[in-house]
Length: 348
Image 1 (cartoon, rainbow, N blue to C red):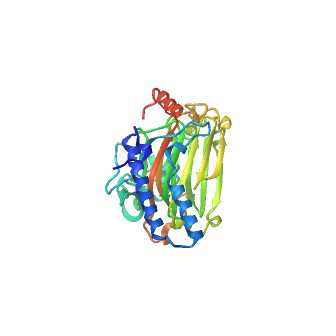
Image 2: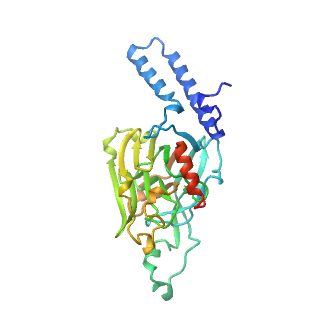
Image 3: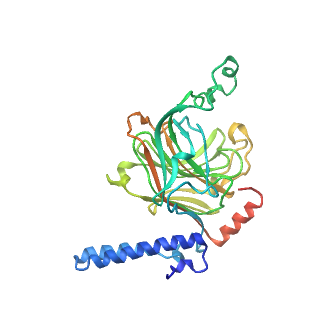
């Protein structure tokens, strides 16, 4: 078998991506042969498509001109559970007063994709504590009450690379198809590996709720999280947008964070402005870093339901489906070295 040029001295992960790219190129050639004799304009359109699909690794460059190299990916090939060497699972009622109980069983590899399902499922909450005078008077009783439900009515999954993989700077990409029906709140995001939220830094490369796509950057402000948020309504796109797969991307270096959808720049943050306020961590904790975006971050992929923003899924025909073709992280040699140095002072 002839290997794609990217695979020369490449890692096994890079070879898998190259093999997939080669398959797609072969399919393109078959299609091209099949439509010989078609109108001139159709042939030109096909050639443009083939050229776009055959972009080589050497053309992937950071803003400083350095070439990117693939440092990690999950292509989700085959069928079965996720690789726990790469992914951890959140469990229970976690955040934002969301309706779903997170559990590992709602995420799996299916036909070469990650599929996360948001399901209607009624069962007892194993963490439920019956109310009493003592726990009702606890300082955080109201905050915890939403999670102390006697029953679970919805389940989903949230996966992350915390404690397994984190990176300082780079290009982060996901190719996915999201469910945009009422109650759906999917996301592809990062959190800083150091310190408490929001002072550890949050980047929402993809977030969706209420018929709106969001592209966000957050850090610790004087009165909670400070947000740079860009919102784009779905009606800006074609009517069939949600039936297709799309690529969300972050380009992150020491100067800026840039968030893209299908190669269109959606939001940008100058990192000279992302300075944490004193004691801006959750509960007034001191930040671990003055600027969280000069420290390593890990990836999260989740399908939330309802809660503060997702809407009521009661009338939505479930399951919700969040389908992920692949997730990839690229870095320049300088970014690889920065990550290595950062890893000497933080465990992941």
